[in-house]
Image 1 (cartoon, rainbow, N blue to C red):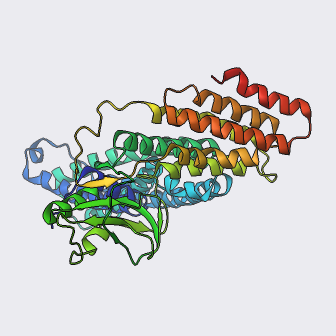
Image 2 (tube, rainbow, N blue to C red):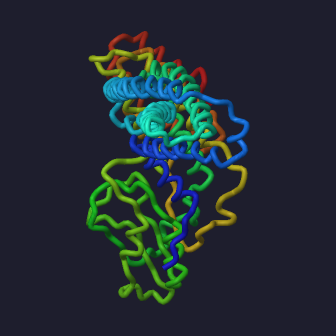
Image 3 (tube, one colour):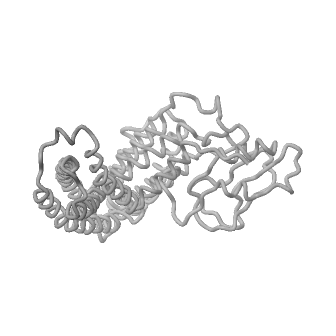
Length: 424
């Protein structure tokens, strides 16, 4: 069966690599080792005649300073990053951890410090063993100065970043950005490149998996390749974010002739990446859930931070307005995978993910309840029928919760008027 390497598959793969702290340090370390030996090539170039003379002792001293300091700084970087990760998990939500650990600035800083340390050790050993000639020694000196400059600039930038990494505001920004990217991708490809699933159409035979976990990614191109070779069709039943068990279908398959008993289910199930955790990449609802969790934790009696919940409501408005925008090109006019039917996301479910926990935990707080009504009233004005209906529904539910949780009549009246001032 043909398997396509698509941009979506590469994006998902490289995003998983970004969550591994050892990838970048390994790559940078290999490059630094290579750079130390590349300097040797200068002996066979015109630099052997033009390069000024540099004493081996001066280069050794410079490399010794770097070797003695870089490992200390790298250790400090690791300790600071671990502290920031722990802070993000405890103050916001543990689900934000995978986003914080993928922070490029911190990973680049750690990689630079470790790479500079390995470079200095390899270069220092080579210099002490008279490996370099006059020209290559000058080239090594120039590379060492360049590495020093990169380390200093990286350190200054990293100090500014680590002061914010793990803080509530930074964590919320990171989660919102990841959710916005996922929402924009799904808005531009609501059926993941396939065609819209007709709930009334016959689906065919169900395909199951022996794994238990969350669907993290669906390779629609692989399903299309299977359907083209077999002359059949595939209806996806488990979108990214769905929790699957051996008794829950991943998809339904139907061949052109209707005979699908002899078809290989492994070709279908292998197109679904299943893991123990949900991922932000292809699961916009997960980002909304995480934002709701952050707001819910802020509203707990132990934290008592309604301001964070109010800030989250503003970000949710921004995300749903992004969802309501029309893509530049209608993705349904030219589907990339016309033999794969994929269900679209329901706006009502997205509103449940985003607002239910805030409405429940903030029902007794007048400032949160008022801000929630104003947020939902603003969304009711968006030119998107599904968003308008969902906003009205959640506004009614939130008002009912507040009426049961509040005891002061003036607070209840203020919550009611908050919807009426902005609602259509």
